[in-house]
Length: 317
Image 1 (tube, helix red, strand yellow):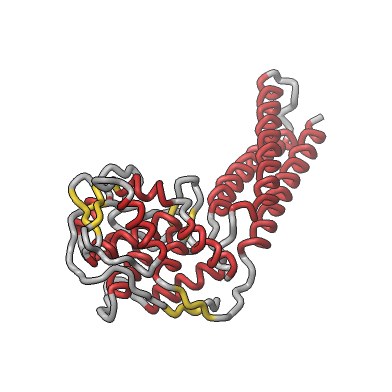
Image 2 (image 1 turned 45 degrees about the horizontal axis):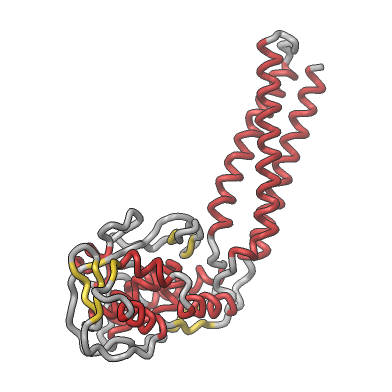
């Protein structure tokens, strides 16, 4: 009987390992294709979406507009439009201005971010990045998620099998031979392997940034090092740093602090890593985790809102 239990444990380990490899293979098929090798010229809002998703993009717009004097961020993360501010040629900036104009007295930064999350200006950014192969839609991982769910049930079976072995041991039904001890050990390893693989795939399948997208971010950060500002335009001086590194790099700590008020996910320290969206989706580099959500602070100055960037980012490996 002990030999049968050992063989069953080995079989369970092979099944869990195979299921895990199938999930990873499907994930790589969708998101880990070889970079095209072509350059990608992205503006600061495209970089922001690629680095941190909708929230980073809106934070970038808020930082640019506040620095330009088109909006005012007061205590409590309250954002209000400045009377007489000119319309912006940037769709996302104009979306912010239109949303604020429709709300007398403005609104909190967190409410503004949530309200704009599915705005056409943001969905257009996502569609453009997806068309270039820099991000994938969460739906593209549908098969991988189904395989991951199958792995979950197989891992649950492995847990049940380990529990059965422990019960047999306690009841002295199974012997103390080496084969039974080996079965216990392999069953435990199988369970740990399944749980670790599930945790890894949960993180990886939530990341919608492709291998090429991560390469573009690496290139962009190399072209625009942290702490180095290009005064040629507001987009380069404020937009690109916030897009790539977070609100901390807006050059205005008060603005960063205020925009973080009341946001449980706020991170004014900025981030070079990935960013979690409200639904668990992550954007960013080849690491999994991190985040950047900002929100509020008085800021003024500047003469215009909405300037074009055009950061040249190579998409090589």
